[in-house]
Each structure stands twice: as structure tokens, then as C-alpha cells.
Length: 198
Image: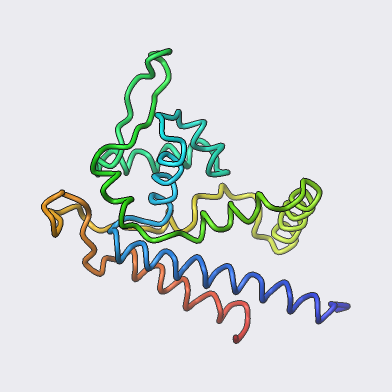
């Protein structure tokens, strides 16, 4: 088939590393906080700015589509980890803010692979970033896997732990071995079998 074996192995190994890092991070976040890695990623971006942000601004920070971020924010609002209120300078625009409960959760939350990937991406040159994006999009299209809207990692498959009174009475989500962590584990186990034995 004319495949360069060395480059194919390097590419697939890189994908395996990504899947392993993301799935491991998702399991850790779910177990320690009761929310998904995507939700924690959004909270961290809010905290890094230290001021209310619009959904569009959050989408820019997380390198994600606005509609995807809007769905994650809605779940965070339900958990009382953020608020979504009319902006002071334009009532037609919603401003998303961390709540006290959200700050408490962040204080003990583990790092996420998403944040590491975004930080690493920022260290690439503009030429490298463009080449990486072009190559990944071309690979996905050639594999018949492109074209679908891309949610935040694992967020579309997540069923987060129901919110209950926390260990300290703060009302934070408490992990209970929810379906979300089992779903992520299935993804992690399924991935290596699809792309080859480790």
C-alpha cells in the first residue's frame, strides 16, 4: 500500500499517547471532583482570566465552538459552579462567572490533559500550528472521520455524578463511580484495540 511504516508507527503512537493521557485525565478528574474534564477545563479558563466572560470569549480560550461551550456552561450553571447573567455593558450578552462553589472545587482539582495540550500548542510556531491543523484535518478526512462537530474531549459521552452534599457540606459534586468514569474507561480500553496493540 506504499505506507511508510516508520511514519505510520510514529503517528499512531502519538494518537495512542493522546488517547491514554486524555482518558486517564478524565478518570482522575471525575473521581476527584465529580465533574467532567471538559467542565473543569472551562472553570480553569474562567479562573485564569479572573473576570466574567462571554460564551464566545470562553470558546476562544478553549479553542472550541461556541455551541459546544454553551452546552458545558449550562451544565455548570445547573451545578451552581458558575452563573450566567446579563453583561453589565450589554444586557443582550450573557456573562459567565465563577461562583464561590466553583472556586472551592478548583482549589483541590487535579490538572487536566486539555490544559497541557493547549499550553503546549501555544509553544509551537505559527507555521507548526498551521501544518499540524492541516495534517490532522487531512488525515481525518482521508480516514472518513472528519466533518462531524467536535465536542470537548469526552463531554458528549459523559454522564456526570449527581450533585450531593459534599464531604465538607459545600454542596460540591461527590464522585460515586458514575457512568461517566465507566464510559471513559470503555473508550480508553477500546482505543488501543482499534489502533493496534501497545
